[in-house]
Length: 80
Image (cartoon, rainbow, N blue to C red; front, side, top):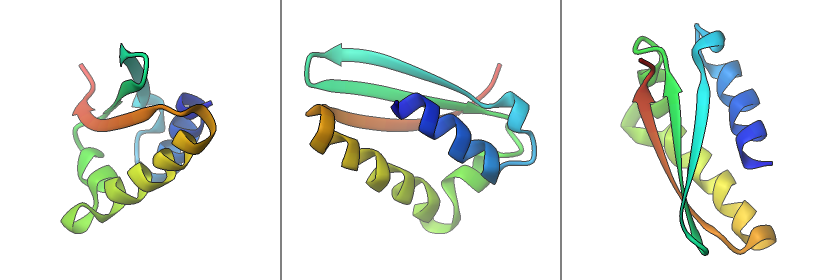
């Protein structure tokens, strides 16, 4: 659910939507680390001015905690 939302939402924000991929690593039973891989030209758009865009993405993802009970860490990295 979280990865499908992130993929569709981030593809709307970037110039190269085909380069978006999402990786979720389960760190333990209550914590997942989400990495958004994007074209290096698009990383600034995903982070936003003063980190506002990535913070809003994190806020929406934290709403998923209420349903699933998991904590999430969100990172943005360039696609290989």
